[in-house]
Length: 395
Image 1 (cartoon, helix red, strand yellow):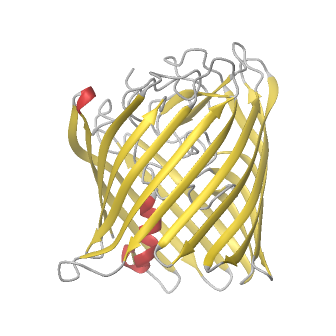
Image 2 (tube, helix red, strand yellow):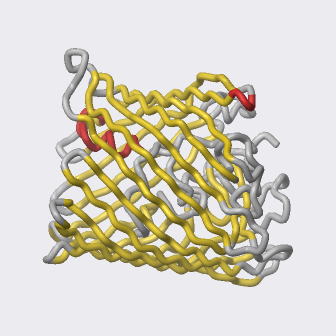
Image 3 (cartoon, rainbow, N blue to C red):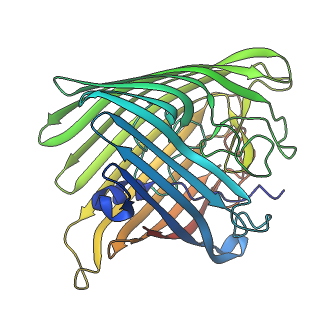
């Protein structure tokens, strides 16, 4: 089962850290257009599974356009040959877009985005500080990009409202999976190795996110609520089910400390041919099952270490911890938990190193628990752990 391997490579903490140094990671082509990209390597250590390996993780290219009125952004990723994609011959045999959209700014407070853009749900851009991301990512709630239109407006008093209509998820990229060659994890057609797999296609999603910025005892904070609903078109039964999710979140920063919390309830009512208690999800060239009903909890804390070290060579250092849990509603389904302890820093202006010690229980990514069933009925049902170090050079 060549796809039943650890999938890492999500952006996570890199998104936080890259924003600290901004323009160093893109070349200005014109006054309004910036082109950039990265080459990233990875070291994985898991003695219990005899994994001790260093290799190329990914290559990606980015483009960003900004003017007084027109805006846009695109990002495309390339994988292959190195673990966990050693089953293909070369880099690029697996590739897909992360996002690709164009937009129009009516003014500084109002804009619209059209194309493959981020669904407005929960903490943005990510649910936590981690490179691996939280359990919200494989559940299809975190870092979710679909094809549609999003309207964003800022109001007086710190209010921010985002509303989107999404016709469908991203089209399949290049890869080997039957239904999982996308960046975001979405309801998909199950590959043959997924027991009791389903074939649901998400359509006509409506999403709304309302958030307010405020000061709470010196903490620069945001509180918000989100909701989404969509149709699940089942190709096997020619019947339609639904996906509904709601979330509340909080984030706050004071001096060097940041904290965030999120709780989200996901309720899917598929019309599957075999088992309505699971929905097959797909992304990163693989597919797996998740429980169709459950509640996600996320807590994150981080600390930014000020200053530079080794004559300015080491900078933007940060330590963080993230806990996420998926409490399932299905009878006899074992809950999933994940704890990540990590740190990240830059060497110069272009090289970032992120180290994470990850612990997971019934976690599809960590320690060799069942990849296809950990987020559904469960996996080994005991704690596993592994170490991952990521090296990214950005230009």
